[in-house]
Amino acid sequence: MISAPLQGRAIVYHEHGGTEVLQFAERPVGAPGNGEVVVRFVAAGLNPVDAKLRAGRSRMQLPLPVWVGREFSGVIEQLGSDIGDFSVGDAVFGSIPQGAFADYVVAPATVIARVPEAVPLEVAAGLALAGQTAWDALESQQLRAGDVIVVSAAAGGVGGMLAQLAALRGIRVIGTASAANHEWLQSRGVEPVLYGNGLADRLAAAAPEGITAVFDQHGPETIEAALALDVPSERINTIATDATVYGVRNVGRGAVHPPTLDALAALVADGALDVPIAATFPLSEVRAAFEFLEAGHLRGKVVLTAD
Image 1 (cartoon, rainbow, N blue to C red):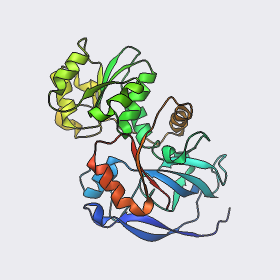
Image 2 (image 1 turned 180 degrees about the horizontal axis):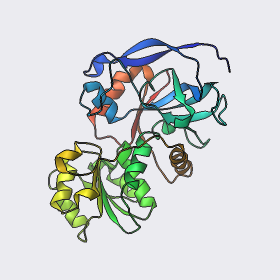
Image 3 (image 1 turned 90 degrees about the vertical axis):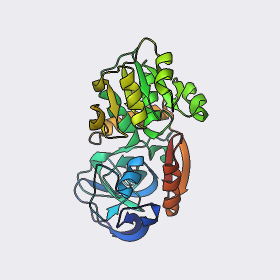
């Protein structure tokens, strides 16, 4: 299929640093190749890893310049060949290694899924990376109904979805969070516990029978509390800090898996999975969006939207 060339803006940085290194650049959009689609940007989810990459603090390194953004939603504008049953005009969401914060996103058809009509595109924008990370981390432990787990940052992007997915499976979930998020956690079937000094004592009081597994999205505090409570190291998973320092697991998202994306979107459409949006910013205010994200203590996702 021959498509007219497109031109659009994208967010890029040429050096590591604070939000000041983020800038717009005009970028020609190549015609979609075999197995690819061009998606007109509607929204995108910010993730802590995006900020760590920009600051040069991530164990994962991308060569400079870096085109920013990993998860997005939008509407298919152009089609390459061999793209399955997708069509121009389909609302989709997905994840790519970089370059999702752009007016047009070129993506393989194998990393996107359709957005159900009942799911706002702003919500779908935060599902492909954060949602599948939560799903894959949870799947990494063999858990059953009645098990007791701890989820740190349980009102955040990944933690909030992981806690809810576990509760939907009949697992007892204790979630650490600030007091402002306790009522929301309770409404989603999660038992809230305040994070901070004395965490191990509060977790011991909440689960005197013991803790089956711990999922950390916050950092050393949660891991150290779990180890102090004799949770086996292989039952502790972190995506927030260097797992090798503590000898625990580090299972995040695997390869993009469209059936998982379909399952997540269906849960959102049914109202079983709540994905709060902490704040939205237009794409042109990407620096302010990152500053808001990096201030922390958020409930749900920070989302960029089309200007």
